Length: 450
Image 1 (cartoon, one colour):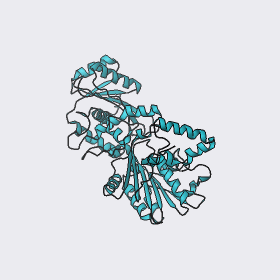
Image 2 (spheres, one colour):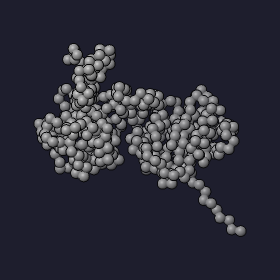
Image 3 (cartoon, helix red, strand yellow):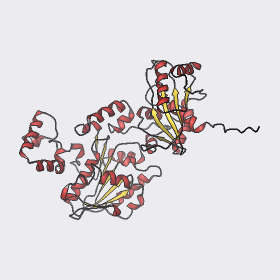
Image 4 (cartoon, one colour):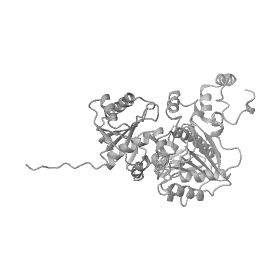
């Protein structure tokens, strides 16, 4: 196993190439099964990539800003394990968006602290006390960023903050939690904070990135594909196919912090804050909205499915938009969406083609209930009251709609569009759907006395 000294700090066991394959086979032959298993469990420095290992230069704050599946959680958990193993006086803060996520991801998750601490090295976890205790005396406490006041009073030597871009920014809790944590970092000779996150445009992220630019924060970056050796191939292929051409993919897969469009009606943080990935309530109404293209070789045909739940909340269920489609093809896509989601009505903008739109839709499905709407205002003006519904928390996205959300974040208040493509066709369809569900007053049934 020569030349190991010339390799990077991490990853000599996992580097590609015929020579590395031979070395791994030789290692497997030499070690007994339990020794080989222990190597995988204990020798993180040999398996980790450089971006998952602490900076070699002096640092106080280390930010791992990377895409989903990169291995950020494992890096944070392994760092905590290493600190606790070598320093019995360590007092560690584990800070997450909420206590449930801290426990389910940072502590008990597949890549959490307990998983990174096998056998005799595992700490004792006391959920009722929000505490982890190692045999040598090192202690870690759990803190929710949603309760920043709990970080007043304690003292720490180390801290791991996970998914800081998900912390509650609605009332500056995220910034308060971060500031309070910094004031607790006063134990030991060199207090250190590790933050792991997929980037988003939040006030806290902007502040930390500004500190990084000023040299006060060490930053490691990476993307989902960096961890291709561990992630399932089908998962990687599906994620790349679905998101690689979108700003959402640049953010969530490549770990790039996408600059927000100044004055945009929607922000990614706003959309993400109301994303709903659990079961939805019973539907009161379902609408399929259509923004037809002017030609088959021009803009996309925006097709969005929205549902009004019995709880009074609107849920965006699907983006079925099609590109470069003939009238017959996009009409069939509308009909298929209406059947798949059992829509009560199809709402279609009729400015482009008038009754032709209705005729094309009828040809696709004679029984399709169609309502034609006419745009008397520009796309942005129509979108402003819908954006207000999001601000009020009355709309949820039930999936990851990358292309649609990119367009939404490109609509600028007062007019203008700075998103992908020539026109926000998907976003316009969403606006028509939510207008029909949430803003159009339905006539109350009248009673006629005989």
